[in-house]
Image (cartoon, rainbow, N blue to C red; front, side, top):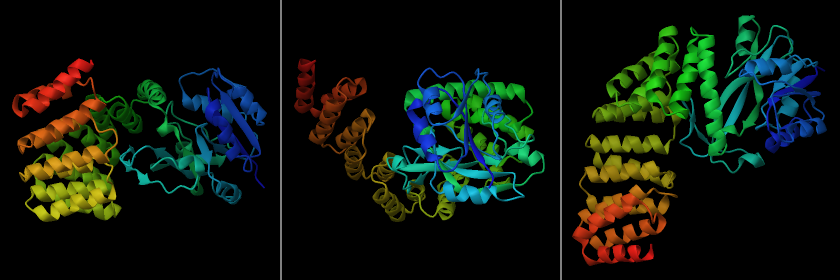
Length: 454
């Protein structure tokens, strides 16, 4: 039977490494770990688990580090994990069958990335409601999946390429070797890191992404990857757009680059340009629910509501069910004159996901558009009850809507609740002062109470 080695690079991974190594205990015959400078107990913990640890310098190059670890492997096959990952239990029966194949050099493995909300995505892949039975994963409401070559033969022709987003897949294909698809999962928890850890990783990926583009300036994929970091992690839509446009220029067939060029243009308010890029993405093989939804968003922002509704219907057919898209379709239908149908769709979406703030926002927008202000005020107050951590501006909106109905006492009551939660919020205080000019004594009494308690 072929022998399998776990091959890893780590740094300061003591918090997660033990669980990772436990998950491979019955699967691998060898563990090789390259440590790039840990200052915690990572090395001792790895050796306690039977790993052969090689201490190497960090050279701002993930591929170089992984190849240093790979050079130490003696087994026939290589399994690659990161310290914040867990191998699924199904691998214990799947891997022996996969490594017994004589004509396969490597396997694409599905990696399940756990996230904090259903609105998260990975590239243009939407999140899926979490149905995992893995104990460590049950706290997460959703996950996003992607694939990467994580199981491959030890072969001198197969090695990692790429300073960041490194992979052996390109080498396997370049050598004319066969790639298969694995029948097991890897569970990844890195996307659910705390904000400080994510920010540190994002800065690293940003720096390495720039270096990778300098290394391979004619590689469309490198420009695409840097653009995604600029867009999603750094919040720089202008720079991201330049990267995506360069990727489109270098490889016009890369549909995902056209898609994200459109996303960047949407964030910049260039809706007509975005629409053209989304339509190009569809023609170039990116005919996904995400593309249909974004085409709908572009039409909506251009005031083309019937076209937007048709695109959202198309997106819904591709995903079968999405409360977010359903609510967008509902709002577009309302704006296109199909009032009752649109409201039914928005209310149905809220019944599916009552804690999702953007669904409440669309109901409020629809009711305001229809000049049903009393209902909009009720809807705005419902959002405050249903959505955890509603921002201060939501209290201002609800109070403003109540004031438009002449229900000053309700407006003041909403502001009172908001100021209990956000006592020092300047926007809320200013809104209350404006309200007091019209609402009279109740608002003034609240202002005095707040002043005397500070």
